[in-house]
Length: 141
Image 1 (cartoon, helix red, strand yellow):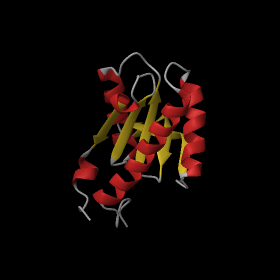
Image 2 (cartoon, one colour):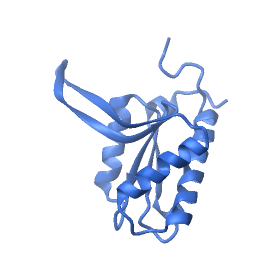
Image 3 (cartoon, rainbow, N blue to C red):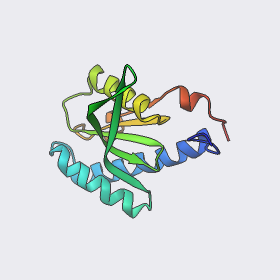
């Protein structure tokens, strides 16, 4: 069985909308300018409130030249085993943040990622949504 067998783009987008709605709710209540750890804790509570399954600080192993390296990456949140969420509280999202998320998605073999920067006046301005080849190959419905 393939990892994402039976999953559609529309299902992933439904989950993504719930996550984004949760991020907007957190931002609306806490505002910008706090430490990333505050938004991390609040997002976990909001995901629980929305009954979304998630894993915090998921380890991603790295294989190089067919050898599993002794070091691992950790992504902030993986929601419903489909979407990586990287939380930031920075002046602005840099290209390296987007590259990091794409690398995490590829290494974890997950189809979608959300970069959520809470340090913006309006949360929607701090959201970047990214997809990869896995997503592109999924059915629409």
